[in-house]
Length: 482
Image (cartoon, rainbow, N blue to C red; front, side, top):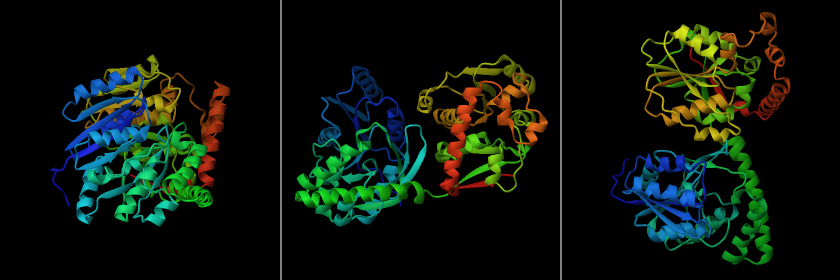
């Protein structure tokens, strides 16, 4: 069922000094399939730099974005301010570090019309500050008794009729202000409609107010004692029960809810097809230990087998060192440009220019102290280009994902080759064949940068073992493209 776009939807985004994720957040609204929108950004006392940034956004998108500046009073008051300024028939809330999937508003509006309801909340994926996939929450219909036992509504997944939310504004409380609101609404409409389709990506930030357990506990008590008018004993009991349900819900989100996904892999690089954009990467202990970073982008990833650990997950195990990937790869003559991204290396550039008989465009990549810093990387890649990245896993894969993301609607083929480029170009000695047959390359590489490499190896090994014993890899299938 496709609904027309006659109704105006007001999107309300409280903003306070959000530096890292707001651009992606706003982009996810601008790219909605439903376009009859007004975007109301409430600047809740941010620093002057951000105030200027929001002002420029309003000038750039003057037909759709409205920015209101106010003193810092908290997210609840900011949303209420946005509600009062809104003109939409429906209102959707979005935190400045969350991201909607493109069909979110269209899909939910269709369901509201189909089921003749005024409130809907949806399912969502959970990621951390470094884009690690952490789990999935599945929304369901809730009555009052279910809701008061567990706050199972994701704020950024809600779409609500404007006149309904205007009768139930947010309260002045540092966290749980949305919980108070939903409890107020459900007393009027009896049930909150929940949809199991995933419509957004929720970011769980360690330093956010909502992640502070002590504050959450105190505010949960306030919900029952002050707003639900329960006595102190019942309020304390319900707060304990809410905490227990939160632990159970968190376990389900992490271990039970995520559906199985499929990664593709190749045994023979000559079978690699240059049709749709892809990221080619090594399947080894390093990539397997960081597989949660790639979970949400599994459709773009193609692995080749490059480590003994892959033998635990793939039956037809056949190992190919990274240096042989670049040596044996055959690319179409139609590729327009070639790029090397990462650490500058004249031997690598010379090798690639001789191999492909094309000029190699080098792009220097600064050292990323944190994975989330990669989200600030900018580069304009030409359509129909081959990009080779020579930094380490998992930074090279996250950089590759970033390159595809900021260059949409282009065919870009990315090879994450890391140390393989160093060996094939002669910068680093090739692992002796005897050591390679014994799967002891890691020991060979410890000859140089020993402390750094050993620390990285131990962290990778720990992460891989943890995923193995917790059955994380049960969420993943590997499909042979050969």
